[in-house]
Image 1: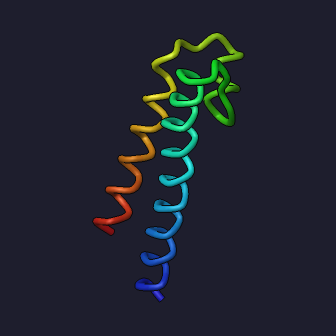
Image 2: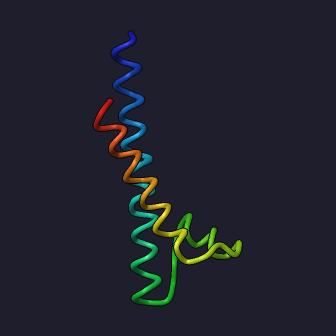
Length: 71
């Protein structure tokens, strides 16, 4: 049972990591190319967050992917 819990938690980390990578870096790319953002980063941008927050969201996603790979 413990092995199953560890496997499912690693899967969730990978899922959330992939989502945040796409949301963060994808939004930064669309903001630079087409002057629009989407997802989590768009909500943060509307709340007054600076532009570098997109990259921070993507970096958090990368960290979650690394944690999932180690689990």
